[in-house]
Every structure is written in C-alpha cells, then in structure tokens.
Length: 553
Image (cartoon, rainbow, N blue to C red):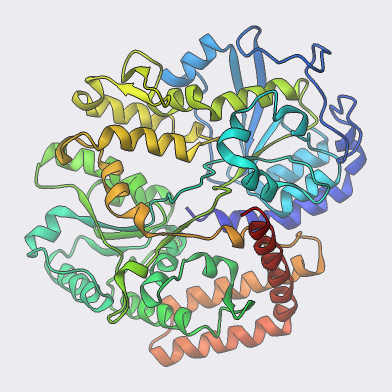
C-alpha cells in the first residue's frame, strides 16, 4: 500500500483548515478539556478512579479513516463485529472520505464537526490537530486499561508522545519483532511450465520476464501495482540493507546525515533497470494510471507472472485460493527477494517494520465519552479483541485459550479453509488496533504443528520468507514537517518533482543515459526549491529519534 503519498499530500490542507477555524473546532464537543495540553477527561460517570465497563451499557461512536482508498464495511455485517455489537454493545458509525480524504478532512474541520475517532498517518497532521487542542490525551487511561501499555511497551509509547510529553496516538500493528509481507509473488503454474528456473538475481528475473512475454502474450510479466509502487520495493535488489523507505523519505542516510535521493547511485540504478523493463514491455504498461481494483483483478485471475508489492499476499491469498480450487497446479508461491549479482541474499530487505507499526487512531474532543472509546480500543488491541477480529467469535474456528492466551484452534480451522479465509478477509478493514506480537505468535504457534499443505497460505510465506526479509526502520519515523511550515512547503514541491521525475524516468526515457539526465534535472530543480533545507530538517528529526531509542535501551 502506498500510504505515504496520501499522508504527505493531506498535510497542507489540514494545516490550512485548522488555521482557519481553530476556535470553532476546538469548542466543538470540548467536554471541559480546554487546550491540547490539558489532561484527558474521565468517563461520563464522573468517577475519575472508576473503570469503564465495556458491555455494561451501549457505546456508539463515529469513525473516519483518513484515506482516499478506505471505505469501512458495515459494522455488524460480519461474524466478528456482529459478536462485538451484541456482546460488548459497541456500534461504530462510519464517516466516509468519499474518495477524497484531503477535502473531507478540510470540510470537517471548517464545519467544526470532527468525528469521534480519526484513523490516520502519524506525524504532521496529528501534531497540528493536537497543537490546536482538538485531541484527547490518553495518559490518564493507560493504567486503568492496561493492554496498550503492556503490549506496546514504554519505548513505543515514548516514541509516540507529542512535544508536550503526552500521548494522543493509539498505534496500529505496533511490534517488537519483524513483520510485514513485502516481496515477490510468483504465478506457480506459469513458473513450473517454464521449468522453474532460478529467480535469485536481477538478471535472472529479467530473463524470466522476457520468456513469459514471448510464451504468454495475455499475461503481464511483472505487475508493479498502482502508481508503480512495486518499483520502490525493487530498490532492495541493488544494495544490501536497503529498505524502500528511503525512497519514500526522498532521502538516503550517509555518515549520520540524510542526503539527496536523486544523486544516490542505488536509486539511479533501480530506475535504469525499471525503465528498461518498461521499454521492453516486461512491466505493467498502465502502472501510473490503473486503479487498485484493476491490480486485484489481474492477480486474482492469474493474469500476472510476477507481482512485487509491499503486501502482495493481500491479493495473492485470494488469488491462490480461487486458482488452486479450479486447478491444483495453479496458484501462487513467493520467492526469496531478488538481488543484484554479487550481493549477499541474506542482506536484502524488500520491506521494513517499525516498533510504532503502521498508523494511529486519535480521539477528538467531539467524543461525548472519550474514556469509553479508549476502553474499547484498548480491549480491541488486547487478546480477546484480537482473537475475535482476526478469527471470529469463540466457538467456530477457536475454542478456549492456552496458558499464553493464544486461541486453541478447532478442527474447522484446517478443514473449513474457505470459510475461515472468507471470515478473515471480511474483517481486514476493521483492524485499526492490530497487536502484531500477539497475533503473529498465536498463529505461528498453531501453524508450526501442521504439514505445509494444511498451513494457512499467507502464514506459510510469512514464516518462510517475508518476516525474515523486513528491515527495522523505527529510527526513521515522523520525519515529515508540518504542511504549513517552510520545510513543509518545500517538501510538497520536492515531492512533486520526485513524482514527475520517477514517472518520466520509467515511462519516457529511451536509454539509461536519459534516466540519469532526468534525475540530474530533478536534483537541480529540488535544490532550487530548498531541498537542502528539508534534508537538514529531516536529519535533525532522525537524530532525535536515534537519541530516543538509545535512551530506552
């Protein structure tokens, strides 16, 4: 998923909207909590020391996912959320972005009608809302509702704290161990029909894609997803210990400084390779125009030979299930990440993970009972909540727990694979407070007892490949400046230069030399709009993170 673009582009509009109507928005649903530096309000019962009992009374709150692509499914429309609705008396009312999150957020801020919960990227947008007194702090709740504190740990929570020292962000898929799905998905039937050749190096991948093109004219040799996001994943093939996050940062670490991406030899080689694949029609020709649904359709129907993405297993799991059901020889496998000849395959990391996880939920002052909402989110991230949203309510695919609180899976978990996977797929877009360590350890404990043919497809490849090839990039979180700051305005300009140069180098360059000329021009243009100042800002933020992490060791 290309989440970073959305967050960067949203910053400016959020900042402008907040600056326009700070007073009106802050007063909306204030609940007696004046200003972003005040402590969070207690539950509506008025008992500061009391603990909100989830399920004792109905709880309803509005929820907005700040992404163009996100549409929340019907709450209660699947087995898991229906159980939560009936047993915990919780109802979540969706607020849609309408496919334009930037405008939606601005409209809500201007109108003074913020939703109770906003699910969004960490960073500048959150800090702008916080600084203007629109968010509720969680500090008074952490000991009363202990799941987040216990599972995320003080180190992660400290990294999430705002400049005022308080915690306003509830992390999603936080972790203390590797996780992630980035890598290379391969069409099993095509691969075997072509003799199952070695796919270890970039040269071998090129040769394989050329063979696919000549043998299967109706198949996309290399699918790189929407906005050519898979190209970024492939940067890992050209250097050891090189996560694609550096592309997203538009900056590369060098001698304790962040330097230009445009002059980086590794990035330049990546775009030369990608341009060659595009010119020779070995790569998706509509990578910059296709929609997410089109990518899914191609993968699910087996019309791609290789699919590289940050989470290829999302579509791959569905495609594998459907294709293998029709033909036992069909489906998908994953291969060890491709690398340039001469590099150590064990130092190639197509993906990354961070202690802080993916994104965060914030509770706004529009909430009538913010403590009750926090109590729910804390339950949701705890063992019972995670068991329910991942594998459904107790009694179908799991029954009881072991000494570590891991679910004891029933025979149906392995015999009713289709039903199990359908249930799990139906709840993906409700996983706002994922607890990586609990979920991963629970499923791995069980899956390790099964023969390969009975293991969950996605879990198998996570244990064999993807979790072993993700790089810890916690030190690089929260480097983006506020959208209305000088650095933020520079960042917007640099991002536009980056996007245009990337697309032009891949789709328009006729030679390796042209690719380099495009990047040289991008470097010049970026420096003219203040790129060096932006790099200095990001370097300072990076070094602050390094200091925080060292202090918690």
